[in-house]
Image (cartoon, rainbow, N blue to C red; front, side, top):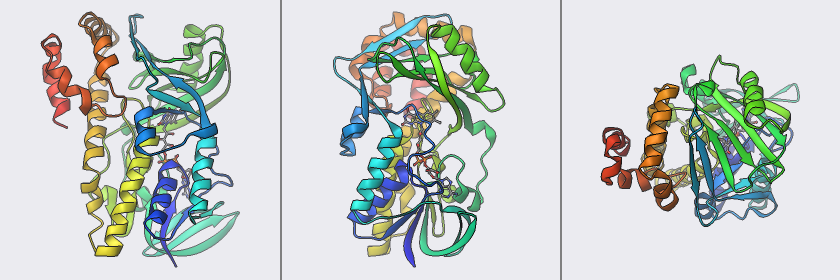
Length: 382
Ligand SMILES: Cc1cc2nc3c(=O)[nH]c(=O)nc-3n(C[C@H](O)[C@H](O)[C@H](O)COP(=O)(O)OP(=O)(O)OC[C@H]3O[C@@H](n4cnc5c(N)ncnc54)[C@H](O)[C@@H]3O)c2cc1C
């Protein structure tokens, strides 16, 4: 019997597997696809602070370094945040996942490709493997199986469509500013935004997210031709991003089943970024299971141990909700006011793309931003 079955060989599941091995426990990663990292569909933008905190050596996955962002309101008003040093990296996602898988294998993690989880009954797990059914046994199941998690469904959790963003993203060639990502706000990307993540001066990933039912692929083509008229796009892919509060209680852990990463909504609702948070949560879950196996600590500790991470994720969710309620004109007015009050300089000094708690309190403490006091206090109380 496998002690711990990890469903899904993405960054969150692989990191949990590595950490479990470091703590002395057996873990098998079951991945539905033949190869780790495929199909690839990601902007590949991760924070420098997150990379440092996780002790990652990006090696050949590193494609670009980012010093800031340009944020455009619907009428074109721009906030430009440019830091003196890189604050984020652009990675080649397939290589990144495969690098994590190599590290996991070196530590002794077993990876079972072609293993699609279909059902769970107690400690019995049913997989579909190359058109054949397979039965495996495991004492604990980690559902790190992404946004459409089968484990989440088998735990009986159903999530309404309002908590998902439908995205389309293409690879583009053209002329891009290598050091800044670009973000376009407005009702053309209702509930989310349009983005450009530069891989180099000649290549970028351009994408757009919106609520379900709004046809992001069609909107993306319009977005690219309007904002990047000289760009040539290819390889458009569509996918969902979880966009809601992180799961808690029996939605997070039920009996021997636990959710992790996108499956658990451990994704920043402001940007859709989930690599760093999923991996950090992977470490926390591995340590929780180790404490359970060594010292009989309850698995419900997982939620308690996630508290600092979930505080940040809830802040991201509140910031997202604040923008969601706004019409184009209101976003224009807000961006113009923030620019006039010096938000660019403030974010260059104090901004943190992962941890809003590091700057929301400071923002609330500056009288010139008190016009947003109620919102800032609400976010800070997450
Ligand atoms: C267009 C787009 C752009 C993005 N850009 C960024 C970005 O720039 N930065 C960032 O941090 N995040 C980004 N994200 C989000 C990021 O991709 C996810 O947050 C991250 O991949 C979550 O990791 P995970 O390990 O939880 O899940 P995943 O990476 O989704 O891995 C889940 C794995 O489980 C497997 N699986 C699924 N079901 C089963 C099953 N039943 N049985 C077995 N295996 C199964 C899948 O094949 C997959 O390999 C983006 C997402 C999208 C869609």
